[in-house]
Image (tube, rainbow, N blue to C red; front, side, top):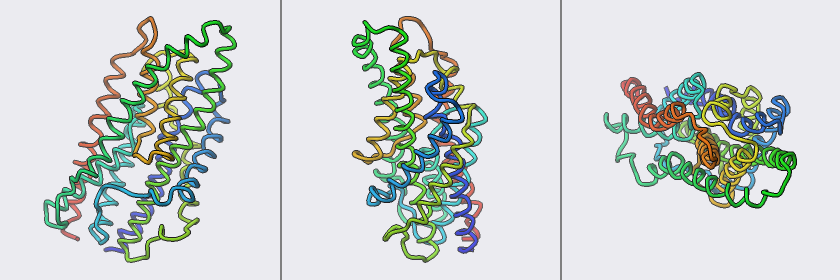
Length: 337
């Protein structure tokens, strides 16, 4: 049973990386492509390479930060927990892609892990309550604090930056905005690669530990990060344009200048969150919140309230829905454990 769960878990972990790259590519590209800072083809190749670079940064610069606040046991129950969480997260990502909603893979996985552990705890397969303060921190920061920070910073920055550019020609402002949009796409992609490379490495390492192997993160393991980088880059090349359309057009109407502010804020926060300040962050929610914050600083009404309510509803439902589905799957597996 343990061998089967380990093999299945590794296959699902690779699939999760591919789907994650596919699902999250629009976070970096929606606005740059909309305002012609990058073409779709060049943008996909560019962000795929920068995502891979972010994974390598996680491997060689940030190895000590590969941690999680969710206490997964290193046995067959731990393997089953990760398998259930991965199935749930992949399914949620595909469902939200179909809806065109920018949802968080980070909170979906955290919710799935917590739900599976709660299910295991309910049938006495694990000791102790998995709802620890550290586990809740892993949910609250990307779900609440990071989007609120991105919204507030983008909203505040528009006015002073607009004041600095008040004497610039419109064409000059648009050109400068496109440069910022392209640079912001690189920052968002690099931060995304760090965050999701670190998380994917933890998933694979935990699966191997549960199977009785030595910790692959204890030494130099280029093969692990090479696999993650290749999967994330490949998934990015098939970027989910349904979500890009929501971010760039459906959710709010925004001009190149405010788009550049949003892209710069999201890129800066994700880069800092992956390097200098190691906190869990959602690329999707940080980017979408920054776009809303910058777009709200306009004299005329540009927000599509109906779409924004749907986006927020998906964010609120992500953790409980994924927890419920993953917990149910674990309970269905529990007689075999």
